[in-house]
Amino acid sequence: MKYSIIPAFITLLMISVACQTEKTEQQPNVILIMADDMGYECISSYEGASYSTPVLDSLAANGIRFDQCVSQPLCTPSRVKIMTGLYNYRNYEYFGYLNPNQYTFGNLMQDAGYETLIAGKWQLNGLAYKDSLPEWSDSLSPGGFGFDEYCLWQLTRARKEGERFADPLIQQNGVTLERDADIYGPDVFCDYILDFISRNKDKPFFVYYPMVLVHDPFVPTPDSEEWEDPGNRYKKDTAFFKDMVAYTDKIVGRIVGKLKELKIDKNTIVIFTGDNGTHPSIYTPIPNGSIRGGKGNTIDAGTHVPLIISWPAKIRKGFVYDQLISFSDFFPTLADIVDREAETDGQSFYSLLKGEEYNSRETVFVHYDPRWSNNVNRFRNQFVRTADYKLYRDGNYYNISRDILEKTPLNPDSLTPEENTIQEELNTEMQNHPVLQED
Image (cartoon, rainbow, N blue to C red; front, top):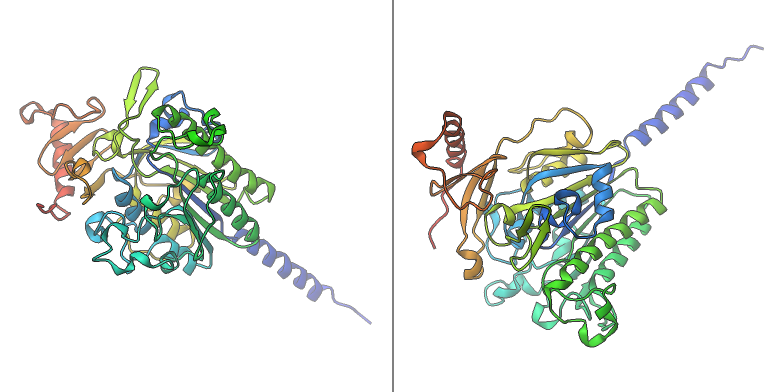
């Protein structure tokens, strides 16, 4: 009797191909960490500042450090933009609010089959407008934006009811956690993230972590000497800012450490950024002077934020990317990662992460209408910029590579031919967007 080995061989080949296909097509996990009020100058790998950020520096050295990431100048405008991929004039209605009709990257990742979590600062229910926004009390709102689980500060309880650091007021999946003066809010969020990762290590997951660090009040962390005295835990002093930056780095280290412990770090994309510039009360020493935080303002220090991305499976050799990235670009990048269509004002940079050809942005447009306090409303404006030049709607035109504080607009009669061309191109881009309406 003759036996054929062909069927068995084919069967083994099919199994091998299937296994390879499954391995190749395994979706990467994604963790998006966004520090609160942290400009680019706070990470020592950017400006050589005196802050301690060894974990973030290592991620930058082994991943991609983006040197020209442009955010909105303030927290809610940035959060709405990064979560939806749309310019603020399309869907920004109130400070501290995101309309429930919006489709976010949480919805996107959930629809793609990811397990999803948001932890940290919410501030999107419209707590300041309780008379006109009935959804302010909706404790299930994160679910509507695509998050299976949440652990949040300022969901349906306002800041005046409880702070975010010592003795934090945190709501988690419909329950208000018991408060404790010895508990530090950032640790609560981090612990929950680590637990979520452990429970979902065998599935693709998406974690969005809008941190409460390093927003004011500038107070001691558990690693500060002053923490030992409970009476000092809400002692306000800008001197504690450096401790808060260091603790931010420590928490990122805990998350990266958990990924390595579970052996899922290779195929996990870790993204770290900031929502806007540093608080104006903070002056950061750098080798050639200091940088004053520009939060709320449209100058570079208000919109220039760090962006570091690690993905060991694809980014095997670290490098610096010095071209523009907009906060509208995160949403389409995530859409490309999960291979889904997305309506967006942004441009995906997914190919850059994979080491493939990428057409860099030439310009970034910002529509800024905070609709909050006079302190920030006075800076409401629109601008279009390249890496070196910036044009405002009112016609003020700056060479920001030479005039970083925008003290002296370029004289229209003294422009070089190149500057004239750039101005015309920026103005053409500006005309593609509706004019910012008067108050």
